[in-house]
Image 1 (cartoon, rainbow, N blue to C red):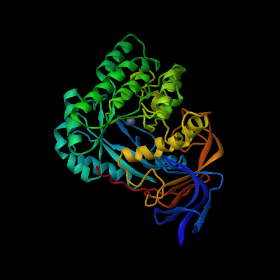
Image 2 (tube, rainbow, N blue to C red; image 1 turned 180 degrees about the vertical axis):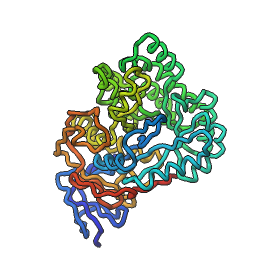
Image 3 (cartoon, protein in one colour; image 1 turned 135 degrees about the vertical axis):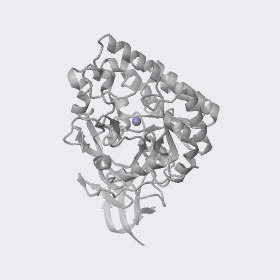
Image 4 (tube, rainbow, N blue to C red; image 1 turned 30 degrees about the vertical axis):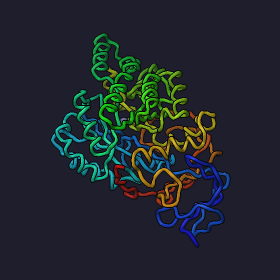
Length: 454
Ligand SMILES: [Zn+2]
């Protein structure tokens, strides 16, 4: 029996086990895992780790903030960078504008993504106050393969508690999963006004406008409402001890509450905002970076399954775009680039540093994100799964900089970080996308993944 492609002699790492075997691929799927397989094409993975393609369920490519501000990785450059870092599936967002139906907004986002994406993707649907009258349309959106719905407790999309209740009920009724940006927006806008009026306009006032205990108040409120409604909930971008404690308390009660963190919260601190000039503005993101103590809490939470996923919230803006907020920190476009380095950084500073196991690394970056977000056939190495596979070289050292990364942005928060271990080959549905630093993918090669509620 000959396969189209065989990955030979690698150390297979899944969320559950580590073992040596060959993987046989026929067409787009994994057809066999065993010994002595032979293929039309063979890749030798001796001395390397073989993992599922990584899954990043929180990214913002070409996010339009209005006023000419668009996040600077588009669907081509962002997905190409993702592939270099071993990520083969992402989940981005549909943000309906006032006056659009949810289905129209979905069609527009598909039209943007489909011709450009180089890896597979799915979409979350954002539901703001303007979409509350359209909650009856959710079944039509589920038919289009969207099963996760983004709720904001901040920004122009900020829901009042009654609206939040209605949205959670509607998501429950279609069997979906709410994903939530939890901050207390009234408190934040009040503190911002106070700081700016007093001339406290530098980036260091950004974290001081978003206190961790009040971020936890918002997370706790969502968790309580979701529990009362009877719907699971996924809390986005957790960076502080106080929110980890809320998630831990809910899970201890047996509630279906899930939490993610992102590389920026694991590797950077709020001291970055003290840098002079635009340098202090670059790492502005929301929720803000916190402290080293918070980082230790996050690592422990990842190891102990208090947090279940690592995503990126990838949303890069150039130095020039960030500089627009130099006179007033609240006008700095929020977001940092992380889409490329997530998987290798978690290996280096998680697995090699002894904070998480090899299997937990794969679980956090591949398997649980795929399972929780209904991405069937992704995030796992098993017969019948899509052949989305990374051959990861634990001995390749990469010093991160804009010269070594492929993100379309003129800075990286990880400049000078050394990754000990990097993907040497990234395969998507049986096709080699990246091979030892060369990109073989094409715009439009990635596919939209229609999801089903369970
Ligand atoms: Zn986000």
